[in-house]
Image (cartoon, rainbow, N blue to C red; front, side, top):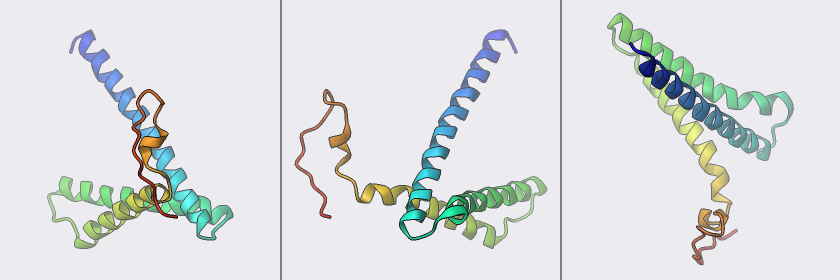
Length: 120
């Protein structure tokens, strides 16, 4: 592998890690705000978002282990991964349900003048 290939690989890896870090922080904040809105506080509110990510991670690692051992993936693992993905998607979609149309939040040069209002 020559020097240019190394630069491409490392810069791509850093870009992917950067995007993943931003997405992780945004996802955590959405889940945390949702838990707070439903009455939890303190350590419980801080840890519940991590349980969802932990469920996704643990299920993914079981699937990886099954693939390496060339054994079937347990059905419960598939269900728990799906449940974790559904939970994190729900937590990330929930804040948007109460917000105005996203186009109203764009910079003025790109803003679309749509008269879409969400009922409260």
